[in-house]
Length: 412
Image 1: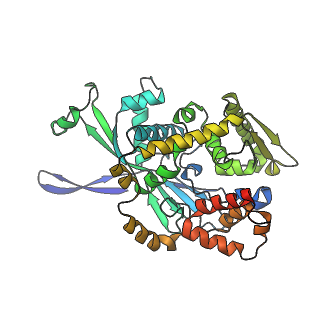
Image 2: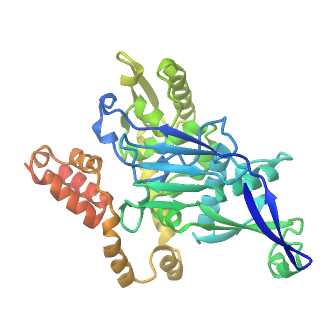
Image 3: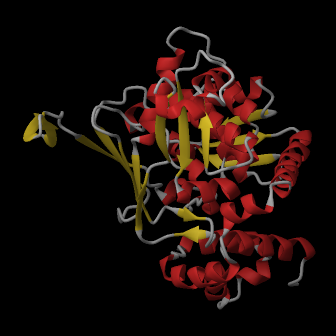
């Protein structure tokens, strides 16, 4: 029950508004390590894309809070809390978010920008009568959903995960009516006089900084929107990151099911596997992968999927990266300062203060070890060295050094 205090005829009174009960659903998406053959995949992925920000559940309920656990200790999780009267974001919201990322980039990567329903409809390719209503509801749903990250929030400035619990919405939303006199100046800047309202989006700080370095910008928005299945879209983004610049990837079926995540029931896992197969087939039909082979020895829990990519996709992936990098270089100096840091000395000072919040997990250390030459892995002091390096330089830089060491065979 919510109590709101209002004023009427200079007299205070209380209006009582009944709100529906909230339901909390907990989902354990911890991976049983006995199912995983590729140990490097048992990790806390720092990229926010790989977390269940947008639900794949088509039967989401209003006022239902979902909590995803990523380990058996239940101290690593994400809680998704919708506003009263809403359900958590799903496939439609994911598409709207992708389009917003594209529009934001087209506008020069500002943290705060204006957008109209007409722009969103055009980018989404929606022409139905209900398109405006659907898009507006999606914007409200995203803006009013809060995500609590515990040991899961990747912080770009530190290149690592924060230990503390962080609660954020993805963006703030202001809806401005152009029919109000005080907004006449804004209305004058809009060419289409049929537009009655516009939307100001302000990406939350943590998400904005992560997006600058790790978000959808490494992908082609048109490709993402062309993928019909939300599950297939998530798989595509996931395998594109995991394969690095390779044309072959072997990944555990259980890893995919838990990471997407999909409904997992041991008694009916075959149905979930069919969803995976259908999603991979869509990626193959769209030439986003060359082929895939499902390998099952015994139970589905031990199954793996081999994914083959076209050779040209490696070059395409690298080209996307460099194109994006070049576009960032063309941003004005002021934009870059706002986007990344206000002052280098201040950044260094803050980095030192925030180091205590970095959590270096055994999975991170194991991941780096897997990338190193065999002789380097055998050194007893190496795990401690890796831990210190991650704390000082971030996981990404340490990974690159490990790959470089193996490539030129510095240790023989």
